[in-house]
Image (cartoon, rainbow, N blue to C red; front, side, top):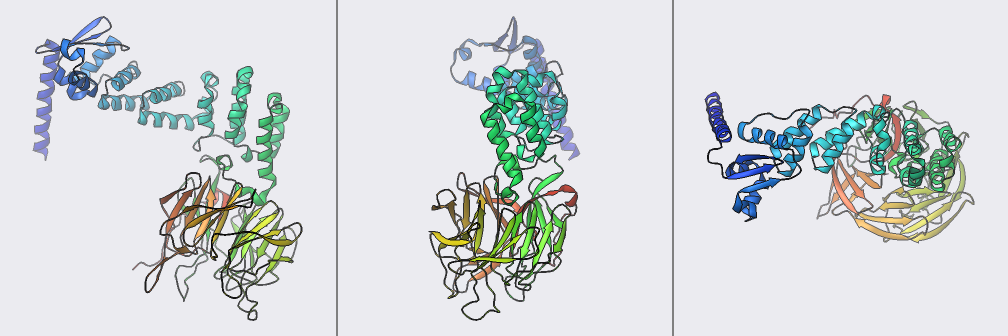
Length: 589
């Protein structure tokens, strides 16, 4: 190998020396390049070998290919001389003074190797003073590597850059690109908002009219409540702008309505990577075998949406058993019922990473039920209790627990008792989808419980009778996933039901479902493979369904091991609790 390498080096050296001699003497030149007031004697075959621009020119029958004279505009003669030194001599001619000029010319001449060399050089010399101009340069010339590196530099040094004079000269779209960036390194969202408002004040007459375009990208819901009030007091131009008021009101509602806080799919409610908080997907317990004797665990796992890693949280104090239910209120997770402890009531405090056994127990023990949160109350709906007498095992009762109180109260009944259901909440209503009835048949009914009047009615029908669905709220709609992979949308404003999409070859039950940023995330579960003897296989996959374009994406991410997912939730947690990465220690075959 050493001999081959030496031989190649000798070959490259000989070729390089020969090319340099041709360039210095002008021998055998067959074309003249005119740049500014200088002329350069060159060789078509050499130029074509390294530049698709020249290759296309001399192969197309253009007048330059006939006359042998090429005039290049927009490039300095010294820059072109440096490029010829690179072509003929292999010289590293890129310097701080000419890097940008050579990059522009290399892009024009389609010299990819020289373009990369310029990008590498410029990336190493990025500074607070030049990073924006070099990012714009990369955009203009489609220099992907430079664009990425310059942007990373900008987002990493946002605080210092925001204090530079040129920051006040940014275009609106450039400013928006910065403030919407998840990787923006900033002390807090208040700093970002204040920086934007200073930019507006710099040319208030013109930029004041742009507030409606910029405010949708400010992460106002993640600022302190007092800050939202202070904005209106401090900045008259914000107070007088109707659209700004609307976004501030949305932020206040996000903070004042903790039961529905995680229903938002807007990026402005997601924490940035530089924050001390992270949005996580929490998977609680779950069966690790598909049939008895069930293998279960008290593990609580958290998947960081920014870090793309799995972590261990505090484990459950005990296993509630199969088919318990959960819901999220504010940032805490509540667990009720289950096959082993039908009346259990647990609470996970996200501020402490700690589980506690609540004193209050369900009036009527249950599993296969659903939970929902409205206002300052949480509800359990329907479910199954094998200890009840025949014909009454599937329940209709709805129980309510007001946070801060000491007991559950039965407040209503479903029209049709159902188990193996899914449910969501919107404003003062709880929606219950499908389920299995006491006579072991499935229903397609969408039942609606009014938390103010404690009455129930049937308001719609699913496309087919079904149980074991999963449902989640995304803005003004509930999305229900059926066992056959059909994705059904229930519009809260019209109570209309519509099939939105279909996940091919899904056939899955006992999977997890959450939504984030306009996408549904499905994970784990038990896939039923049809056949004379159906196979029930646990899976570890994570699927993403984008409700905006009806696309299904199989993620590279996986849950730590194949499992049934009794329940999962989306919350925000301090990163100090995300320290123990999860590794599967179960024996492998």
